[in-house]
Structure formats: structure tokens, C-alpha cells
Image 1 (tube, rainbow over the protein chains, first blue to last red):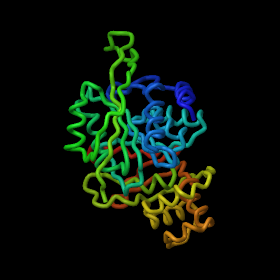
Image 2 (image 1 turned 180 degrees about the vertical axis):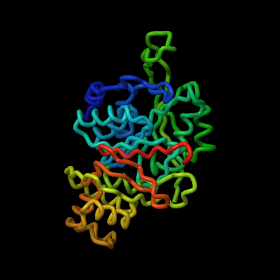
Image 3 (image 1 turned 90 degrees about the vertical axis):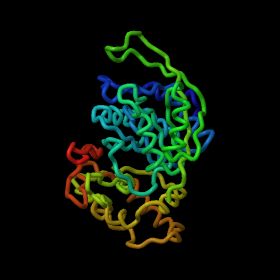
Length: 210
Length: 122
């Protein structure tokens, strides 16, 4: 599948109708999502024929992108039932298979190392400090066997690298590219119509766990 | 929920020492076709808990998987088809996952297990 085609399909997905600020719900736009998964597949071979998990999947954009690129088994994890309902409808609409589990990522137990790749657009922690690093820590320490792709604000780059390598069991941490994240005017406290923030697309490789 | 997902989830209630495997309570099972991908199944076979898969698929009404399996059986297309069916084609649409230690039920509705814990379980 071509990048443009993937971006087009993701652009048709339904997003949060009533976003909840306590979960920092922001849609992952088709531009970012398509580039993230396209790179994971075409530069690293981390998607097709793999088991992929989408942490904090929201309306399912990243996981569905993985399914469209040939992931064999995709599971989206989110705390919010309303988002999961939209995500399931989106999967039906695209006619791809994606599974969902309602849970708090920080409170789930896992068996084995079945998941190869994790993709996520974690809460950036603007509401609850450190939320993004909590997600990353679970992803790298417990769950992923091969790689983790994640978005973090470019302003936090040094902190993310240091924390990932020192505290989160990462063997390597690499910024693949810098992207523009369009934040639409979703919440009442947003003063401007739309802002554009710089985010890094990271690829982390966990230490072997066995 | 596929049994591959079941194979990776465990109960995480405070105080539970061994939350795996979750027992399955069946309300409704649905089947969806998945093309056979031998390479994928070979990779998964090395990672999954096969005994747990056999028990889970029996609970879901599918008893064709052999009790014991070895990597050499992955050369057999017949075995791969059975593995494919149990792992990827069977879905728990309605029912529950049950913590093996406490008996706490995690409901499964429209294929989505709800693993959220109550405040006193965290």
C-alpha cells in the first residue's frame, strides 16, 4: 500500500465526539499516523505478519494503520469504553480485524512475550505529569519483544532519551523524524483555533527479557 | 476476542500471585475466517502457552487440537490449520474472563474484555 493511500484511508476514520480531558484524548491525525506506521513497516519490517499492540488506542488510528499494512494480529488497549466503541466501528468500516481490551495500561498483567511491536501516541502528560513515560515504561519493560514506536513532544527529547535508557529498559532510543502535530481546538481551555506542536517519532528497542 | 489475546492477558488484582491463565466463561462464540500464514504460526508457536490454548479452545467448543505438540508438527498443514483456527478464528463475543485465584469476573461484551480494576483491587 502506498503512503498516500494509507493516509487517505485513515483520514476517513471517525474521531472522538466528546473528548475527555482527564485522559488527554487528542486524535492522532492521518498525516502523522500514516508516516509512523509506513516507516515502521518499510524501514524496519516491524508491522506485516507481526503481533502489534496500540497502547491508549483511542479511536484506533495507529492500530488500524498497522492492520492495513498487514499486521497479523492487532490489539488496541484503552481505558475509555466510548473510544473503544468508535474504534470498533472504524475497524468494521475499514473491514480489517482489530481486537480491543478495555484496561488501564499501568494496571494490566501480561503473560509471555507474544507482542512484537507496540505503537502509541501516549498522553503527553500535560494533565498528569509523567503519563507518557508510564506508558513507555510498561511497553519496554513488560510487553514488547522487538520494538516500540511512540510520539513525544520535541521539547522533551533529552528527558525521553535519558529516561528510556536509564529507567525503562531500552537498549536503544532513536528519533526517526520530527513531525508537526495539529492540535485542533477541542477543549474549552484552548484559546487558539488550532496549534501546531513539534513531536518526535521515536523507535525504541527493549533489552532482551527472557 | 481471539484466543491469541487470551494467551497474553493475566489478572492483575492486588495480592494475586498467579493470575494466568484466565478461565473463560462462554456466552457466545463467533468464527471469522483468517488466511493461513504458516510463518506467523511458527513464530507464535514458540511464544505461546500451548497447553493454555488447548484448554481455552475446548472451552470454546473446539476440541481438535492435539493435547501435546512439538515444533516438528508445524510441518503438517493439518496441524497448522487447527492452530490457525484455535488461535485466530475463534472469537469470544460474549462471556467473561475469570481470575483463577479470586474468581473475579471480567466481562466480555461485543468481543471486548473489560479488565479495569475497582479502586480496592489496585
